[in-house]
Length: 215
Image 1 (tube, one colour):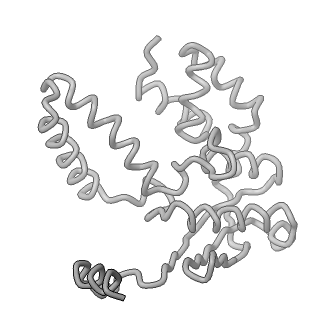
Image 2: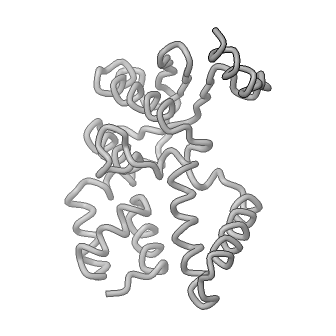
C-alpha cells in the first residue's frame, strides 16, 4: 500500500482535517479516500476542521514556571469568553504551556517555518547522509524522513504530547475542538530559561581538580 502526498493533500482539502490525521485515516482505510473521509467524520476530525475557519479572538494567556529556571507564556484562543473560562479549556492551555517548557519548540506550526530555513536544513541533512556513506539513490528519501523529525523538534503541533506520546499536539487540539464545539487556536508562546543567551563563565577544570585534591 502506497499512500502518496497527493492523496493526503486531496483528503486534507476535502475535509480540512490535519495532515497527520489524514495520513492515519488513509492508512487505516488502505488508501480509500471516500472511506477515509467517513472515518474522519466519525472521529469528529472533519467536523473540527470545519470549525477551524471560524474566528477565535477570545481565549487565555497563561504562564507556567518550572523550578524557577524555565518560564513560559502562551496564548490560546477560543471563539467565546464562556469557553475560555471553562476548566477544560484552562487545563488544555496549561498542558500546552508545560509542553513548551519541556520540549522547547521554536514555532507553533510548520507553516511558520521559512522555506529558506527548510532548504538549509535539507542541505545539511543531505550532506550528513552522504558523509555517512549512504548511497546517492536513497539520500533524498532519508532527507525527507529526517525533515519530518526536524518538524517534530521545532513545531509545537508536530510534537508528541508529553502526557501521551501516542498522540500529537495537533491531534489533541482537534479532539478538544470537537469536544468543546468551538474553534481553538494556539496563537503564540514565549519560553525563557535562566542564563539563556548569556556567556557562561568558563572554569579552569584542571585548577578546580587540583584545589579539590589539595583541600
